[in-house]
Image 1 (tube, rainbow, N blue to C red):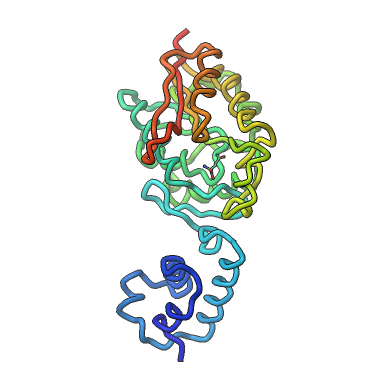
Image 2 (cartoon, rainbow, N blue to C red):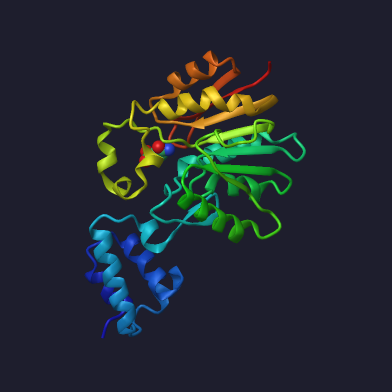
Length: 275
Ligand code: GLN
């Protein structure tokens, strides 16, 4: 007879990962894995667990195996077509909410939205915000649309648009806030062939250049869409803050600054359009 206790003992995965897969397969909560750990499991459940555990051992990300990842306290659908939301990106949402502080019905744009994590988290936290989100990938937009519907409901649609950065946006649009977590890993960075990154969309991770190419494009084009006093904030790599600040300053933005993530790393930089 196969039980949770038995599978936990036999699994070669880290205990936390085994638990997450078991919760997913059985539809149980963490506490049930403990209180019901001696119950006989259906053969079909055991087979499903074994299949997922095998795929995990071969490297597939947990978020893709269970189809979701928590971000900003919300459960987002994740597929291989989108970047898996990361905890450090919550900083970008926090900055956005802070900047929107005194504004009524602020207009917000998320460039390269992927799963929609940033845009949906902002819209969820600010019911009056008008949120736009673009991505060049139709597959990603479909995931973002489902996340928006599930987490925001029918009455709070995101304005989703297929667009290569700002290319397809109506040039008359203006935003108080523009945010982006663009691909910023350099083409030759060995991390691209390690861990979860091997299974995520390459276009969401690297610009196939020095890691600053997408950021340069955004810094050049996004300010055309800022309202006076509006600001642009970008997530970037641990060693890119000075470069990104220089780009923002050269583009004419003012009050340029970087903010640190929970690990103490300058992770997001931004500036204001005051001209
Ligand atoms: N923070 C991600 C990582 O290092 C990269 C995401 C991105 O390029 N925007 O895995």
